[in-house]
Structures are given as structure tokens and as C-alpha cells.
Image (cartoon, rainbow, N blue to C red; front, side, top):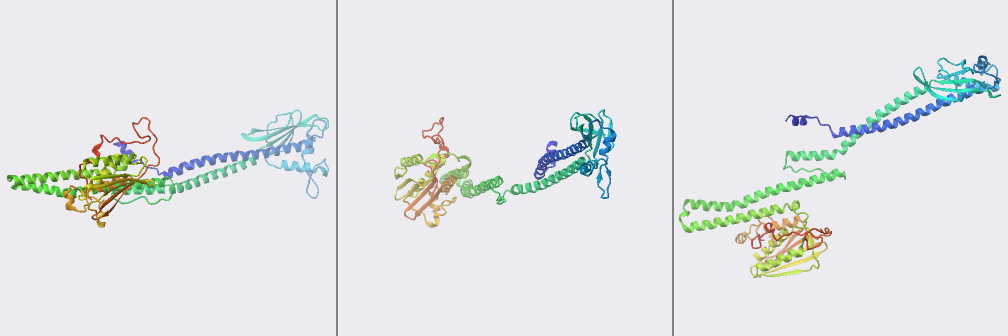
Length: 533
């Protein structure tokens, strides 16, 4: 009990927020990866620029100090690396060079003026001869130019070391070392990192908002479906349906399926109500008759043998009629649920028509039956065999009931396009145009008095009509008073036949027929009076 309450009280998280959250996580991962790649690429470019600065500075220093033939001294280095400013125009001039060498002095000033650049020159013995700024990295000799990353006071710096070789004799004059503290690199990297961080946050925020709006729009059809279900749940009789979504996707298909299910459910509810109302209405009369006879017998009729016999016979007759009525109502109720139970049955129309034709010839020898079969091959339709038999029995039964003068019935079978046509023609009393549109209604009788005499309840044609419609066919009537009637059944012919089941006991290849020899309980007995016009 506690677990169920805790589950019921557990706070629900909207699918919109879930979708927005996980979308944001995905966007965050993508943007972070993308930002890392950009950051690494950009910082690599910055480091390469710093490396170029160090290389250029080493080249400049080397070009000024490699003109000696003997190892460098402090005075030699200061002479070339400590320029003095002279002249009226303020140009930087070296004390030992004429104006043609000013390019070197300018290059030195440009490189030395960088706050993050430290230039050191060491003698062949490793003794420092020149220092542009303090805090240089400890010197380590190298036999070739080398630029590498190291640490200074816990911070990354880039150090370039190059041996100074004489241009005259190639002897070692000393060493030049350039230290780049990477101050500008770190400042730029921090700015880039801040920009990328802001970009990531903005991207995630925009992605979350966009995802929320998008999923809200995508879930709108689900909200419509949910609202419809809630309305039906609160009021099962409410005639509400999911509105047209126009999304043309799976949700639209789901809405159509739900509407179809609601229509079907409503139809079953209406059928149930109609069934109860019809049974109540039709049973009222026989129950009243039986009650009247029993009350009469209780008062005085039981002492009169003739009255007793008459009342018992009348009560028995009404009891039989109630039994017939209930049976037919159940048949009609089953007919209205055909698609649930018999939607995939396939039947050979020629066999069923031939069987019913022969049966009626046998049990009604006083009638003349004629069968016109215009089909050449077997015609197969998607219908339960017993149901097709039941419809034919109802129509032939009616034809016999109302053919008192000319006892003749014609049965025909033909095909047209993709349908098969079964016609039952009688030459009896016929039906007026006023009654033709009503003969398929429940409990409708053209001549109620005569129908009662013939034992009809007014349900047979309703059952036939509902059975044929359930299998996507139609049944029509043409009639003229005094000349008879023609009932026509049209059913769609099976175009794509199922494959043959090797294990099935089936005489017809590719067709699943229904064994009906022992399954007569759902079919009307041929001797039973089913219905009248």
C-alpha cells in the first residue's frame, strides 16, 4: 500500500523537459568537443608563432655575433647587442656599424622590446656574457639549434638555444639563448577559453529553448490525444474525437487509429443499448400474454379444461417465440462483431450456393428451384462459410414464405469486375416502394399480422444485411407488388490468394476452407422460419 502511494505521489517530469535536458546534454557534448578542437588548434598556432619569434631572435643574434674568429667576450657581445640611440632623427644606431647595418639594430630592438622575450649569451665555458632581462631559464648547452618547452617558476615557457659558430673558421664562439615567457600566449589563450565557455553556455541555452519549443510542438498531437482520452474516460458517452492533426506522420496515424477504436467502441455501446431496448420492447408482449394467461388460470381458468388447454397452448407458443427472438437477437449481436472473430476466413462461393440450392430442393419438393451459374472457375471471397450459408437460407426462406401462388424460386451466380453477385428471385407478393427502404430495419414487418402467422420476428433480413456489410459487401432489393422480389448480394472477390499450406487437409490449393459438417450450431436450421419481408 505504501509503495503504491509513493508511486502515485512521485513527481512526474514532463517529456518536454526530459527532451530539452537530453538535447542540451548532446549539444553540450558536441560544442565542448568542437571547442576543444578549436582551442587546441588555435593555441598550436599561437605556440608556432611564439616559436617563430624565438627562431627569428636567435637568427638575429647569431648574425651579429658570428663574425668573430675567436670565442666571444663580454665587451664583444655588448658592442653588438647593446645599441645606442644617436642622430637628430632619433634612429637607433650601433656603435660599430654604419647605417647599412641598421636593419640588425632595428630587428634587435623589435625583439628585445617584447616583454616576454629574454635574450642571453653565454661563453664557450657556459659563463653568462649578456642578459637582456632578469629571470632567464638556467642555461643548458646544445650542439644545434633547439627550441623546447620548459617551466620557469612553475609556469610554462619556451626556450630556444643555439651554438654560435664563426663564419670565418667555423669554431664555437659561444651560445645564444632566448626565453619566451609566453605571456601574450597565455593571455590570448585565456581570452579564447572565456569566449569558448560563453559560446558553450549560449549554445546549450539556445539548444534547450529550441528543443523545448520543438518538442512542445511535436507533443501537441499527443496532448490532443490525451485530452480526448481523458474526456472519454470521464464521460464514456461523450461524442468526442481527436481533431484532425494534419501532421502526416505516425502520430496522425495513431490519432486515426484511436478515433477508429472510439467509433468501434461507441458502435458496440450503441449496439448493446439497442439490443437491450429491442429485446425489452419485443419481450414485453409475449411476457404480458403469458402473465395474463397465468393470472386468468389462477383466478378461475384452471377449473375449465378448455380454458386451461387454450392458455397453456398460448403460453407455450409465446415461449417458443421468445426463444426464437432471443436466438435471432444473439445472431444479430454476433453479426455486428464479425470483424473481430472471422476477419480472415475464405470461402468458395460456388460450393456454398450449390449446397444451399440442393438442400432447399430436398426439403421443399413442392417448389421449383432454378440455379444459373455463369462463373467458370471457383470464386473465393473473404467470408465465414456458415455466415454466407445463413444469409442464403434467410433469403430463400423468405422467398418460400411469400410465394404462395407461383411456387418458383430462381437462384443465380455471376461475376462482374472484382465482385461476385448472388441473386435470389421469387414470384410472390412483392414489396411496395414505401417498405423497400425499411425491410432491413430491426423488427420491421411489411404485413405485421401475416408475419406473426408465419412466425417471423422481423430480424432475419437485419441479420443478413449486417452479415454482408461486415464483410465489405452490400445487399439490395428490387421488388414490385404482385410480381415478386429480387434480393442481390455483392461481395468483393479475393484477388491475392494465400499460399498453400502443405500440412492443411484442404482439397483446394491455396485456400483455407472451413469444416462445416459438424459446425452447424452457428447456422440456422433449414426448417426454421427465420424472417419475413
